Amino acid sequence: MSGGLADPKAAREHARAQGSTRIETMPVLPPVADDLPKGVATQDLVWEETIAPGGYASRRLARGTRLRLIDKDGDACASLNIFNAEMPTERLNVADTVKVQWNAYLGAGKLLLSDMGRVLATIVDDSAGTHDTFCGVSNAATNARKYGEGRNSGAYPNGRDRLILGAAKHGLTRRDVHPCVNLFKRTRIEADGAITPIVGPFAPGRAVILRAEMEVIVVIANCPHVLDKRPEYSSTPLRVTAWRGPVTPEQDPLRKATPEGLRAFLNTEDYYRR
Amino acid sequence: MTDDPALSGLSGSILHDAIVPARAPWLHHVMAGQTLRIVDVEGNQAVDFLIYSAADDAERYSAQDTVAAQGNLFLRKGTVLLSNEGNPMMTITASAVDYHDTIGGACSCESNTLRYGHHTKHQHACVDNFLEANLTQGRGKRDIVSNINFFMNVPVMEDGTLGIVDGISAPGLTVDLRAEMDVIVVVSNCPQINNPCNAFNPTPVRMIVAR
Image 1 (tube, chains in turn cyan, purple):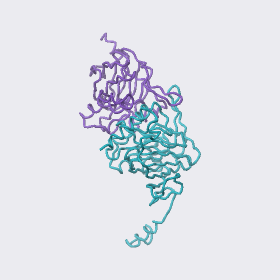
Image 2 (cartoon, rainbow over the protein chains, first blue to last red):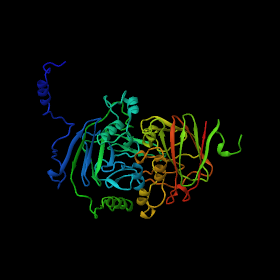
Image 3 (cartoon, each protein chain N blue to C red):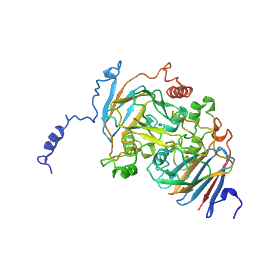
Image 4 (cartoon, rainbow over the protein chains, first blue to last red):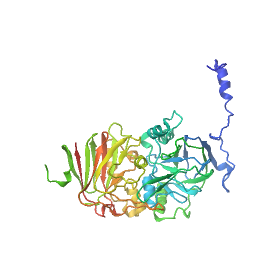
């Protein structure tokens, strides 16, 4: 029992007194960011939030939106699920993403492809260069083995359950959480197929900027990489900033960088031809 | 005893023995403890393969959990095929082929347009087989995830370059899978004709379930 909150008015005062609290890991409403890239107007800012270690967020983004993820302190891992917002049965397809582009390592210029042969998002900028398309996320069992427990309700939430919650906030279910990409944590594939995880910690402040090529729901979990061998739950805040931007024009160099990618853009543009 | 070499080494009784025609889907329930043998009858035929838990089909094969747990991309004898919740679904108990793929995914009409051009959109594809088979049990597009490609070869080079290259299988080679839980297996006998995964010639495969 806490003293002095026995009546609703006192409880209301107590609750309202908390409203001005500011911490690092929270959304900022309306969004404010003093480090937008040159040429981006502050009124185009649509999202500013720092995701807690072990936390998650999900949001619908318009076509053309730029989504910047910053690994603030060098130990964030952004696991992404991406859906076509108006038809979420269309979603990120990691196998097609690596197969169609003939390469498994993500970086600037790479496309994140849907299972319908369209571009959900383009990586337009990347100062990290350490990403992973193979290993997916931790689950309750892997975190229980490593950290003693892995529940949402505990201290060591797992990536899969975070993605499920983030997707559920948009009406989606366990069935909809699909293979993901991990940004900021790297895996290197050896000649015999062995997976070498390279999980840092890295220098603070590395950033990736995605450009939404469709109206998307993006779900982000920030949990330790599933192959992070450190015994402690190593996760640091992940900052998310998004701003409005133009739909990719025909002459965009990333749109026509490869024949496969160009056809993916043609399919995307065809989808919006209505 | 039988003289059929495709049955050699299978103990117990044969519960099911079917030829999956070239380009066709196949769906079968395999109970815990039973063994499923896939025979690459004519050689170098990719067998696209998904697994669902019979008790709860929102739990399904996860390529990412499987490769992360074993720390290697290739599926070999001894690989435990894990679900999206980290549970063992099937184990590869024997394989006459050195390794199998699980990063290359399934061909689709849509991805074919990217890889080969829009003239291939009309061609039959694995995702259509997966859909046709899954729809008979109420599953749909959102139930299709990264699959296994038995008898398919997808190496990854130092710079991350990867691709479907010539197969390492041969006529009559087999892979055996023991079910660790009651599962629904959904297969597409890959119809792809634009890359070497089927040696440009889709052929039948044989599925044998024994207990």
